[in-house]
Image 1 (cartoon, rainbow, N blue to C red):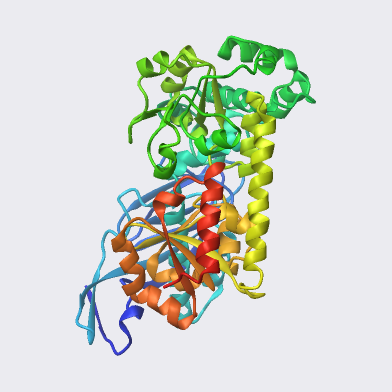
Image 2: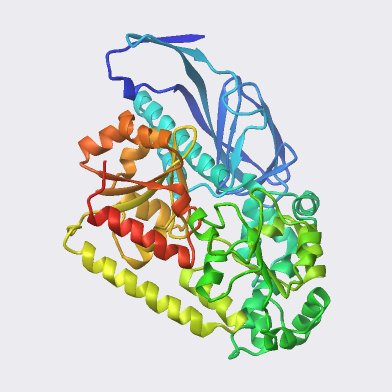
Length: 536
């Protein structure tokens, strides 16, 4: 099946996929009942109320979205006491196969999504509102428009989630457990919340982390307890309640079982001299601490700082240290980021070598991160000296920029990615902390709403950059070729010409790691670019 379109528009407005709307219907699955749906077209399923099981493996709830290919069988079962109300939009997808700029030829796309379908939980309010509007709409042209808007929104949300986790659904589960670990979490409730069967959930968490659910939760709680133990105003009982345990005695037993020492002994000991860190090197240096070992890759250690660490053993790019290397360092402490939870056997082996201190990665305010490390090491004075110097540099930057950036002008931090994509970073990455949190420069509303307020990174296709354009765009590139892309790309030319955006080129090697002492280096580059008008 083909669709031929005679085309007279401009090249940039040609779309790769078009959709033909067929119908939308609302169905009800009664309690303890089941049904089978077989559609000859693609199906988009959204939930109005209730819960049901899809194909024996997925639990559908109010915020679930599912898209299937043509002819796929959907088995639905309602195991609850309330009706399951859902809507199915039927549509056909076509993909552009021929484009001679005068005539476009679209062919039927039998596999619009992968064989498992497109599925995710926690769809946004926008998805639900557009779905509701589509259900109520009676006019065919408007139905087609709303269908396209609905599918586009779902694809963007799905892509966003896939770009931020290794495996969308389960990494979201682990992040949720970490964030809510202080609450009374129960395995079955979390499994149900994310659409997993409890037994499958147990097997999956064991596969992903190497720990049972209870062991994984215990590790997170005890690592958070280590951070709270740095605050001497908190009692052991206070800390127990803050991390999710009922009393200090239970915390002490768990803590000793895992670490070999009591919470009080951990709190009292600050003689950490020989430290290996997997990340956070900039924050350690800001706290006056030079690690005896760390990773040499640029995401942890910018090239310009390497020469200052002549006494530090650098583990070559792309590798974790061997256990033998770590044992030979005679370590007092190992500092790791929270993403090491994905390597439980590694953590267990590390704990045999030295105490392990796990810090939340890419979550903590950058100044607080330095202060936390300093409190653990007893180097608070060094951290305070760094903080005062850094904030003085920020104030100097504000005074230089005040007459140059007019009221109402916006500033954004971007990074060119592979596959014609652009990263838009929250405050924790690529020097954005300087721009948004310290200099208090104003982002475009789209960045504020979609990145900073929800506190999440965003990856977009490059053709959408105009929707996030700022008056001043600090764009990080990986290579000279990407720098040329900024100069030659139609999308970026349009941003500069249509929106009068000033685009400043920054190098990734200066901005990959963004914590502690690295922030000052990045701040100087950012200020110089803006003050000197060094834009393309």
